[in-house]
Length: 424
Image (cartoon, rainbow, N blue to C red):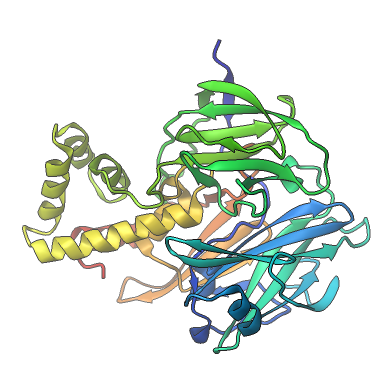
């Protein structure tokens, strides 16, 4: 018997940011009392974070990747981390005064060597305030002794009762939570809580292929999708298990609960794509219907893809190579930054990031992000893309774009620039 579930594409609140190398020497901090205006560097998420309820405290996990390889001793000596807590974005009041974290490996940070470089995951606990305070913003200030400083914000909840505030997917060792919404096929992980006994969760796997985002000018809302469960089983917290399949994995304590924990199972090279069939899909954002049909039905995916790019570049191989490199670098980045219950390139933020590139700045609040792009040639002086957080049963960091027909004179020239090979 197949299970049926209706997907309402929206989301709630959790602070999931992204991961890349920290080049603090070229970054200045956002003012400590006002984390609403984020520079482009900060938007690129050199820091990724999340929180978990820890009884009378909130534990904040912050992950960063320095722009150089460091031993644990070097990291503890060369980096300084201060943190404080605000009641809301833009507030000048402090729920917790500034604290200096004394770094000690194993006690409050772990070093991990990855193919992309050395990553450090730091954690600290902040006390829950008065019961009348329901949410807050934990600010982290990261200072590199070699020069530079960056700040990072983590939105936290103190008493929501949402399952994702208490449980998270950790790595196989049970020491580091996954700070993104995906794990690679074959990875060993654990579902864990900090202050809760072993709990049995129902686990569902969906092999559903979600649609790519609609263009910014499409004002009609898409219809809810029907998802059929491909398999189901049970898992117990604090016990390792393996991600066997690609697709959406969903964990719930009780099938009557409105929210659970979603995790994308992805191929081993994700967020990078290497196969022609994968590489062709994101081209939907810059192609005609006929071009998409030719790519899908060409018979020889590699040759069809080569013909597509050479056609876009009028046969100029150097232009084609340069455009291909730029395009798929953005696709990879979108997958890394924005994967939710579907691949990052398919999300609204991923679509805008691929076509428009990183914004000039990002204005953040607890329920939205506003991406601001300033003057580009003679196209526009300033344009804003507003992404609103929506409740979603699978993930806690999915955003929906506010769409308007007025985006047409901005969007079409940007797409045409890609098609003409004018994007660096």
